Image (cartoon, rainbow, N blue to C red):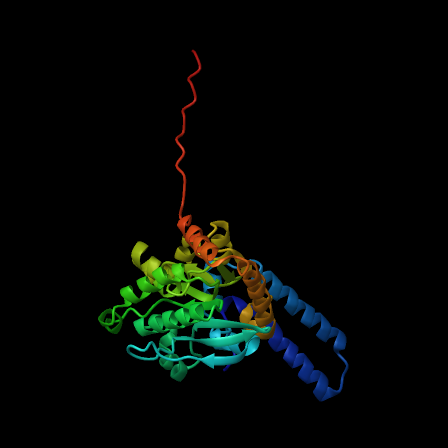
Length: 329
């Protein structure tokens, strides 16, 4: 894939271009400019660190959608072995927007399920741009029930703008498919770890997102609606998506502060798309850490843990203000 640069990454690209020119000049002219090269490399590191330390909510959304960002299939290749993909919902079709199967991670047998996007037109059409049909959620549920039957923990990787909203989904009962997934995931007697690795959009994300632990990558987002959709409703113009993203509090840091997620998985400086190898190793480490904690719970405790976790989301308290007594005149 050709280099894809986000608007706020242009200063980094300019420095990298100058570095390449300097290295080419050094090789062509046989001149030692190692000191200048080191200075340029340090400048690139400082610029990247500064930019990625001061990202807006909308810039984080753009990173979450980066076409070079690792997808579910990439993590399967990087952190698992013995992947046996399972196909079909046994009712209608095999939806490639949701993939899954048996995997082994560091000697531990698991069921891994995740939404999958494409990197070009052909692959995006194959997986419908990461927007699953009802049969995708029914396939996911079939795999989860299979995992429960064999007493295997379940890992879900979430990266979708939302479930497919077209007429086909309505004809095949999308709302029912997601609702059944929500109900059944609460009753599964095995550990469930859900991780938002990119976009976490609406019911499409929640359909595989009921877990004992919900983790989110540093530059991922999780929301009931996309910033563009929110802007179209509130401002009547999708151009206000940046304002909507800020107002919606959808970044990983906002979600953790609101206790909607359990932990943030840090990304390499420059985002997951800049260093896939490091990102995969970090995700694997955090995944296993949280899995070890929930594996200590009994089947009954696992179900109660999930119920209590989601029961308190959105809880708030009203406080009545008592007016101060008037001072005598």
